[in-house]
Image (tube, rainbow, N blue to C red; front, side):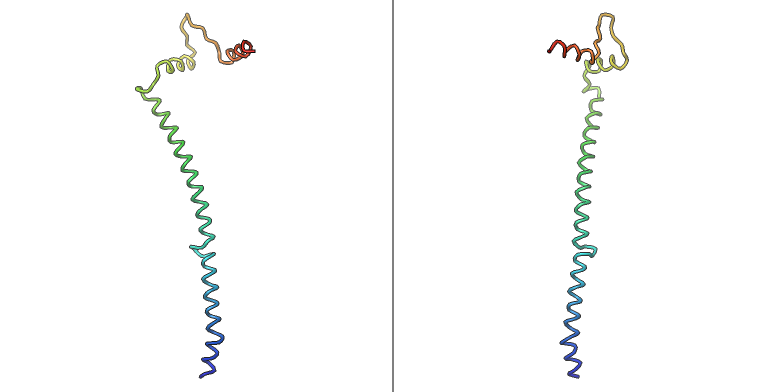
Length: 111
């Protein structure tokens, strides 16, 4: 009886303890809550935050464009200018200078 007890205490118990330590260490690294999974989740979190920031910026831009469409914030002069440019309409006493020609003239006169 003492031989089995001595064998258990001297060989099997330390071996089982080492196996338990090894298993827990492995689970701490590779397990479902391990450090490898933690790094992957942190990377996904950063990507999601970047996507959220981009979506918020896009939403703010769309909200600004929608506000510009409301009648109370619409600038009459800007609306008139845009309408004339898109439709190509002018009054008989108006002179239209295309932007490209105006820039060429400004470059020549500025030199």
